Length: 125
Image (tube, rainbow, N blue to C red):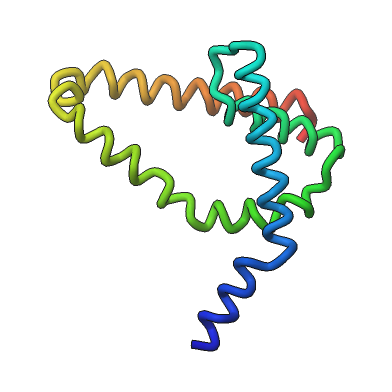
């Protein structure tokens, strides 16, 4: 019981709530930008790019975001369950086109890895 209370106290600590607030603030900014400019990109992607830019140019410190992002990464697997279950609706379609889908997934993964490597190499990291 003591460990549960300690875990909950840590989970809902002021530092973590403040960090989560900053993440939600960038999500809100992304959604607002998407809504105002009628962009065809999801608001959470825009918010993630804004957060990346803010972290890159040190407008916001990594230590401000890290408590919430570490906890979100801890539960990351749970976020994929709805998508996995949703894919089962299209099981017949996936079964019919498994080869082109597999090629597309592998090619896009390799392309993403290549582009990430090039960007990291160009940025000097």
